[in-house]
Image: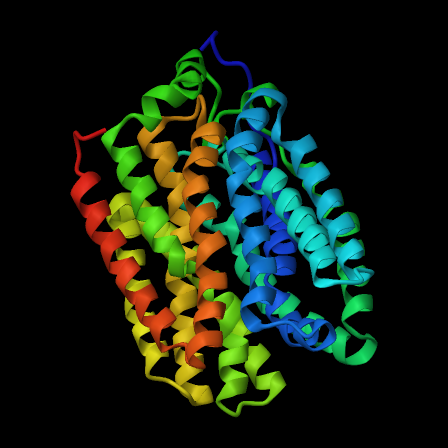
Length: 409
């Protein structure tokens, strides 16, 4: 037992890291997903089309997923905490700058760069840190960390809608900016990269020389990105992400177009958040038992099925059922994906590998919501974008099934 470095006492520190990551995802994505509540006021104030306003969110989404290719390796080298804190500060500044923008172009710059760079600096480092603190309960811990996205989607859009009604969209962006800096930046201080620095092993076990060696093991970035499994994950995520965020931008205007009131329409985003939170808690833990590869395939299939429900729904009950179901499978997807990367490639370069993988989601996010908006401008219907989302998720599931078999890494 002489090779033991230490033993955990009290609450396992890894759960505090999870709490810090939860705060980052709550503020980062909850703040980003308020955009649907701003779409109408921005259209009205700047006299813009739905497609051009939707492009604001697409640019931010492209940046916050694409920047993981830089923030992931930097977190592996410097630690996740400084990047997460910096990201929350930049996000707050961007939201505040959007509140004083005098043109839609300035909103592109302020919101796109502020939210995009801010979340991009914080998200991948926070998720990568969580993966290192857990092995047996990695799916659960990852699910809890990213459940901040679901809770943020439940809380932040209705909050933004109320603030817009009370103060206006400009003042609301200033308020949200302050929340990002104070709450997001403050709680991001809980994030740490390496349990070994505190004499701890993953899951709160005793730290031994064997555990230290296992923590340092894993594929290099070059080895990972050249593997069949990574290529399959990348292609599946790229294809699936073309429809992934369309509901977050267009479900509210879709509901308004079909006669629902503003409060009911915004409530649908909250229902996605409820489903997403349930998916992250429940499906993350289930994936630990059934296998995270098959679980991810099931998430793509589930998102395809629920999008098909959206295509034929116009009432509050039908859209609510879609929102909850889509949220469950979307939440499971976000929870399982980083844990699966850790399973496949180990912890040595997990931040860098997740960062490269998320560039696939970045390209899909850049194109999908804006394309759906421009399709609506041309046809005055969301049918084609919704059915396209069904198709891309089915294709993504097929690609993943063909490339994730054991022994193909």
